[in-house]
Amino acid sequence: MSAGFPQSWQFSFAEPVNAWVDWLVLHYGDSLRSVSNQLLRLLVGLEDGLRWLPWWLIVTVVGVLAWHASRSWLRALVLMGLVTAIGMLGLWDKLLQTLALVLVSTGLCVLVGVPLGILLATRSLARRLLLPVLDVMQTLPAFVYLIPVLMLFGLGKVPAVFATLVYALPPLVRLTHLGLAQIDPSLLKAAQGLGASRWQGLRQVALPLALPSIMAGLNQSVMMALSMVVVASMIGARGLGEDVLAGIQTLNVGQGLEAGLAIVALAMVIDRISQGYGSAKVEGERVRDHR
Image (cartoon, rainbow, N blue to C red; front, side):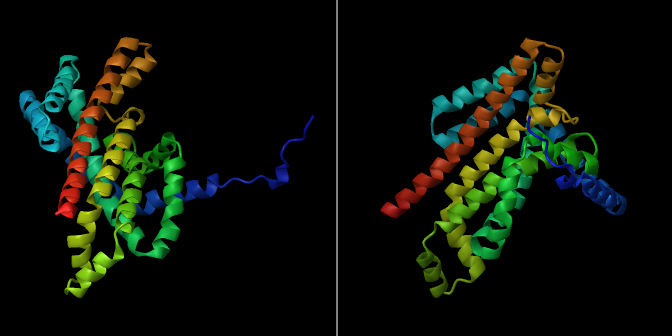
Protein backbone atom coordinates (compact mmCIF):
# COMPACT_ATOMS: atom_id res chain seq x y z
CA MET A 1 0.00 0.00 0.00
CA SER A 2 1.53 3.32 -1.09
CA ALA A 3 2.13 6.07 1.45
CA GLY A 4 0.27 9.35 1.16
CA PHE A 5 1.88 12.62 0.20
CA PRO A 6 4.12 13.90 3.03
CA GLN A 7 2.24 16.34 5.23
CA SER A 8 5.38 18.35 5.92
CA TRP A 9 5.52 19.25 2.21
CA GLN A 10 1.93 20.43 2.01
CA PHE A 11 0.99 24.10 2.05
CA SER A 12 -1.98 26.32 1.23
CA PHE A 13 -2.16 29.88 -0.07
CA ALA A 14 -5.90 30.16 0.55
CA GLU A 15 -5.53 32.29 3.69
CA PRO A 16 -3.24 34.93 2.11
CA VAL A 17 -5.59 35.21 -0.88
CA ASN A 18 -8.62 35.59 1.40
CA ALA A 19 -6.77 38.21 3.44
CA TRP A 20 -5.89 40.13 0.27
CA VAL A 21 -9.50 40.06 -0.94
CA ASP A 22 -10.72 41.27 2.46
CA TRP A 23 -8.17 44.12 2.33
CA LEU A 24 -9.27 45.02 -1.18
CA VAL A 25 -12.93 45.15 -0.20
CA LEU A 26 -12.15 47.13 2.97
CA HIS A 27 -10.04 49.80 1.27
CA TYR A 28 -11.63 49.97 -2.18
CA GLY A 29 -15.18 48.84 -1.50
CA ASP A 30 -16.67 52.25 -2.30
CA SER A 31 -14.80 52.46 -5.63
CA LEU A 32 -15.85 48.93 -6.56
CA ARG A 33 -19.45 49.76 -5.66
CA SER A 34 -19.30 52.87 -7.83
CA VAL A 35 -17.98 50.89 -10.79
CA SER A 36 -20.65 48.26 -10.21
CA ASN A 37 -23.43 50.87 -10.13
CA GLN A 38 -22.24 52.54 -13.34
CA LEU A 39 -22.00 49.23 -15.18
CA LEU A 40 -25.39 48.12 -13.88
CA ARG A 41 -26.87 51.40 -15.08
CA LEU A 42 -25.41 50.77 -18.53
CA LEU A 43 -26.75 47.21 -18.64
CA VAL A 44 -30.22 48.12 -17.48
CA GLY A 45 -30.35 51.07 -19.88
CA LEU A 46 -29.37 48.85 -22.79
CA GLU A 47 -31.96 46.25 -21.83
CA ASP A 48 -34.66 48.92 -21.55
CA GLY A 49 -33.63 50.36 -24.91
CA LEU A 50 -33.89 46.95 -26.57
CA ARG A 51 -37.28 46.34 -24.95
CA TRP A 52 -38.51 49.71 -26.21
CA LEU A 53 -37.80 48.71 -29.82
CA PRO A 54 -40.53 46.75 -31.62
CA TRP A 55 -39.68 43.09 -32.12
CA TRP A 56 -40.04 43.36 -35.88
CA LEU A 57 -37.52 46.21 -35.99
CA ILE A 58 -34.90 44.11 -34.17
CA VAL A 59 -35.54 41.22 -36.56
CA THR A 60 -35.23 43.61 -39.51
CA VAL A 61 -31.94 45.00 -38.17
CA VAL A 62 -30.60 41.45 -37.90
CA GLY A 63 -31.59 40.81 -41.52
CA VAL A 64 -30.02 44.06 -42.76
CA LEU A 65 -26.75 43.35 -40.91
CA ALA A 66 -26.68 39.77 -42.21
CA TRP A 67 -27.26 40.91 -45.80
CA HIS A 68 -24.72 43.73 -45.52
CA ALA A 69 -22.10 41.33 -44.13
CA SER A 70 -22.62 38.50 -46.62
CA ARG A 71 -24.63 39.98 -49.54
CA SER A 72 -26.80 36.87 -49.28
CA TRP A 73 -30.58 37.22 -49.04
CA LEU A 74 -30.91 33.55 -48.09
CA ARG A 75 -28.59 33.92 -45.12
CA ALA A 76 -30.38 37.09 -44.04
CA LEU A 77 -33.78 35.37 -44.16
CA VAL A 78 -32.50 32.32 -42.24
CA LEU A 79 -31.02 34.45 -39.47
CA MET A 80 -34.20 36.53 -39.26
CA GLY A 81 -36.14 33.27 -38.96
CA LEU A 82 -33.90 32.10 -36.09
CA VAL A 83 -34.46 35.31 -34.12
CA THR A 84 -38.22 35.13 -34.79
CA ALA A 85 -38.28 31.51 -33.61
CA ILE A 86 -36.79 32.55 -30.26
CA GLY A 87 -39.68 34.98 -29.82
CA MET A 88 -42.20 32.31 -30.82
CA LEU A 89 -40.86 30.12 -28.00
CA GLY A 90 -41.80 32.87 -25.52
CA LEU A 91 -38.17 33.76 -24.79
CA TRP A 92 -38.02 37.23 -26.34
CA ASP A 93 -37.43 39.15 -23.11
CA LYS A 94 -34.77 36.70 -21.96
CA LEU A 95 -33.15 36.96 -25.39
CA LEU A 96 -32.84 40.73 -24.94
CA GLN A 97 -31.33 40.28 -21.47
CA THR A 98 -28.76 37.85 -22.81
CA LEU A 99 -28.02 40.06 -25.80
CA ALA A 100 -27.43 43.08 -23.55
CA LEU A 101 -25.04 41.05 -21.37
CA VAL A 102 -23.11 39.80 -24.39
CA LEU A 103 -22.93 43.25 -26.02
CA VAL A 104 -21.61 44.93 -22.87
CA SER A 105 -19.12 42.12 -22.19
CA THR A 106 -17.91 42.16 -25.80
CA GLY A 107 -17.60 45.95 -25.78
CA LEU A 108 -15.40 45.76 -22.68
CA CYS A 109 -13.37 43.00 -24.37
CA VAL A 110 -12.69 45.32 -27.31
CA LEU A 111 -11.75 48.24 -25.04
CA VAL A 112 -9.31 46.08 -23.07
CA GLY A 113 -8.25 43.39 -25.57
CA VAL A 114 -7.23 45.46 -28.61
CA PRO A 115 -4.86 47.77 -26.63
CA LEU A 116 -3.38 44.71 -24.89
CA GLY A 117 -2.86 43.02 -28.27
CA ILE A 118 -1.11 46.15 -29.56
CA LEU A 119 1.05 46.18 -26.43
CA LEU A 120 2.03 42.54 -26.98
CA ALA A 121 2.93 43.26 -30.60
CA THR A 122 5.10 46.27 -29.79
CA ARG A 123 6.75 45.39 -26.46
CA SER A 124 8.74 42.19 -25.94
CA LEU A 125 8.64 42.60 -22.14
CA ALA A 126 4.84 42.73 -22.26
CA ARG A 127 4.82 39.49 -24.28
CA ARG A 128 6.98 37.71 -21.71
CA LEU A 129 4.80 38.90 -18.85
CA LEU A 130 1.30 38.68 -20.32
CA LEU A 131 1.38 35.53 -22.46
CA PRO A 132 1.63 33.21 -19.39
CA VAL A 133 -1.25 35.16 -17.82
CA LEU A 134 -3.35 34.60 -20.95
CA ASP A 135 -2.48 30.89 -20.83
CA VAL A 136 -3.77 30.70 -17.26
CA MET A 137 -6.93 32.65 -18.15
CA GLN A 138 -7.69 30.21 -20.99
CA THR A 139 -7.09 27.04 -18.96
CA LEU A 140 -8.87 27.92 -15.72
CA PRO A 141 -12.38 26.42 -15.45
CA ALA A 142 -15.11 28.98 -16.02
CA PHE A 143 -16.50 28.49 -12.51
CA VAL A 144 -13.24 29.70 -10.97
CA TYR A 145 -13.87 33.20 -12.35
CA LEU A 146 -17.07 33.42 -10.33
CA ILE A 147 -15.28 33.26 -6.96
CA PRO A 148 -13.35 36.58 -7.01
CA VAL A 149 -16.09 38.57 -8.78
CA LEU A 150 -18.65 37.34 -6.24
CA MET A 151 -16.39 38.50 -3.40
CA LEU A 152 -15.85 41.91 -4.98
CA PHE A 153 -19.24 42.68 -6.56
CA GLY A 154 -21.77 40.31 -4.98
CA LEU A 155 -24.60 38.65 -6.90
CA GLY A 156 -26.23 39.97 -10.07
CA LYS A 157 -25.46 41.10 -13.58
CA VAL A 158 -22.26 43.03 -12.86
CA PRO A 159 -20.17 40.08 -11.61
CA ALA A 160 -21.48 38.09 -14.58
CA VAL A 161 -20.14 40.79 -16.93
CA PHE A 162 -16.71 40.77 -15.30
CA ALA A 163 -16.51 36.97 -15.22
CA THR A 164 -17.48 36.87 -18.90
CA LEU A 165 -14.92 39.58 -19.68
CA VAL A 166 -12.06 37.61 -18.14
CA TYR A 167 -13.17 34.38 -19.80
CA ALA A 168 -13.67 35.86 -23.28
CA LEU A 169 -10.71 38.25 -23.36
CA PRO A 170 -7.72 35.99 -24.31
CA PRO A 171 -8.76 35.14 -27.93
CA LEU A 172 -9.12 38.80 -28.87
CA VAL A 173 -5.77 39.71 -27.31
CA ARG A 174 -3.96 36.82 -28.97
CA LEU A 175 -5.44 37.33 -32.44
CA THR A 176 -4.87 41.09 -32.31
CA HIS A 177 -1.23 40.38 -31.46
CA LEU A 178 -1.03 37.75 -34.21
CA GLY A 179 -2.51 40.05 -36.83
CA LEU A 180 -0.09 42.87 -36.00
CA ALA A 181 2.91 40.52 -35.76
CA GLN A 182 2.28 39.15 -39.27
CA ILE A 183 2.48 42.58 -40.94
CA ASP A 184 5.53 43.08 -43.13
CA PRO A 185 7.82 45.50 -41.20
CA SER A 186 8.83 47.14 -44.48
CA LEU A 187 5.30 48.56 -44.81
CA LEU A 188 5.61 50.35 -41.49
CA LYS A 189 9.10 51.58 -42.37
CA ALA A 190 7.76 52.91 -45.67
CA ALA A 191 5.00 54.77 -43.83
CA GLN A 192 7.55 56.29 -41.45
CA GLY A 193 9.71 57.22 -44.44
CA LEU A 194 6.76 59.13 -45.88
CA GLY A 195 6.53 61.18 -42.68
CA ALA A 196 3.95 59.20 -40.70
CA SER A 197 4.40 59.16 -36.95
CA ARG A 198 4.38 55.91 -35.01
CA TRP A 199 0.75 56.46 -34.00
CA GLN A 200 -0.26 57.29 -37.57
CA GLY A 201 1.50 54.17 -38.85
CA LEU A 202 -0.35 52.06 -36.31
CA ARG A 203 -3.75 53.65 -36.96
CA GLN A 204 -3.60 54.02 -40.74
CA VAL A 205 -1.44 51.04 -41.77
CA ALA A 206 -1.05 48.36 -39.10
CA LEU A 207 -4.58 48.18 -37.68
CA PRO A 208 -6.36 48.12 -41.08
CA LEU A 209 -4.05 45.30 -42.24
CA ALA A 210 -4.62 43.37 -39.00
CA LEU A 211 -8.39 43.96 -39.02
CA PRO A 212 -9.35 40.50 -40.40
CA SER A 213 -7.42 38.84 -37.58
CA ILE A 214 -8.93 41.24 -35.03
CA MET A 215 -12.43 40.44 -36.35
CA ALA A 216 -11.70 36.72 -35.97
CA GLY A 217 -10.65 37.36 -32.37
CA LEU A 218 -13.82 39.35 -31.75
CA ASN A 219 -15.88 36.49 -33.16
CA GLN A 220 -14.20 34.02 -30.80
CA SER A 221 -14.71 36.35 -27.83
CA VAL A 222 -18.43 36.66 -28.60
CA MET A 223 -18.77 32.88 -28.82
CA MET A 224 -16.98 32.42 -25.48
CA ALA A 225 -19.18 35.12 -23.93
CA LEU A 226 -22.26 33.19 -25.03
CA SER A 227 -20.81 30.00 -23.56
CA MET A 228 -20.72 31.79 -20.17
CA VAL A 229 -24.45 32.58 -20.26
CA VAL A 230 -25.49 29.47 -18.33
CA VAL A 231 -22.62 29.77 -15.84
CA ALA A 232 -23.40 33.45 -15.24
CA SER A 233 -27.03 32.58 -14.47
CA MET A 234 -25.78 30.81 -11.33
CA ILE A 235 -24.77 34.15 -9.80
CA GLY A 236 -27.93 36.08 -10.62
CA ALA A 237 -27.51 37.06 -14.26
CA ARG A 238 -30.87 36.61 -15.91
CA GLY A 239 -31.54 35.69 -19.50
CA LEU A 240 -31.64 32.47 -21.49
CA GLY A 241 -29.15 30.79 -19.17
CA GLU A 242 -31.64 31.19 -16.31
CA ASP A 243 -34.12 28.91 -18.09
CA VAL A 244 -31.40 26.34 -18.82
CA LEU A 245 -30.44 26.33 -15.14
CA ALA A 246 -34.08 26.09 -14.05
CA GLY A 247 -34.60 23.17 -16.44
CA ILE A 248 -31.63 21.36 -14.87
CA GLN A 249 -32.74 22.04 -11.30
CA THR A 250 -36.36 20.95 -11.88
CA LEU A 251 -35.59 18.18 -14.39
CA ASN A 252 -37.72 20.06 -16.92
CA VAL A 253 -36.05 18.76 -20.06
CA GLY A 254 -38.31 20.69 -22.42
CA GLN A 255 -37.68 24.05 -20.78
CA GLY A 256 -33.93 23.49 -20.73
CA LEU A 257 -33.92 22.33 -24.35
CA GLU A 258 -35.89 25.35 -25.55
CA ALA A 259 -33.56 27.81 -23.82
CA GLY A 260 -30.48 25.87 -24.95
CA LEU A 261 -31.59 25.92 -28.58
CA ALA A 262 -32.33 29.66 -28.24
CA ILE A 263 -28.73 30.22 -27.10
CA VAL A 264 -27.51 28.18 -30.08
CA ALA A 265 -29.69 30.24 -32.42
CA LEU A 266 -28.36 33.52 -30.99
CA ALA A 267 -24.80 32.21 -31.30
CA MET A 268 -25.40 31.31 -34.95
CA VAL A 269 -26.82 34.77 -35.71
CA ILE A 270 -23.90 36.62 -34.13
CA ASP A 271 -21.33 34.21 -35.56
CA ARG A 272 -22.60 34.45 -39.15
CA ILE A 273 -22.79 38.24 -39.06
CA SER A 274 -19.33 38.74 -37.52
CA GLN A 275 -17.79 36.12 -39.82
CA GLY A 276 -19.40 37.84 -42.79
CA TYR A 277 -17.80 41.17 -41.88
CA GLY A 278 -14.44 39.46 -41.28
CA SER A 279 -14.62 37.71 -44.67
CA ALA A 280 -15.57 40.97 -46.34
CA LYS A 281 -12.48 42.63 -44.90
CA VAL A 282 -10.25 39.78 -46.13
CA GLU A 283 -11.81 39.94 -49.60
CA GLY A 284 -11.32 43.70 -49.70
CA GLU A 285 -7.64 43.31 -48.88
CA ARG A 286 -7.24 40.73 -51.66
CA VAL A 287 -8.89 43.03 -54.20
CA ARG A 288 -6.62 45.90 -53.25
CA ASP A 289 -3.54 43.65 -53.41
CA HIS A 290 -4.59 42.45 -56.86
CA ARG A 291 -4.95 46.01 -58.11
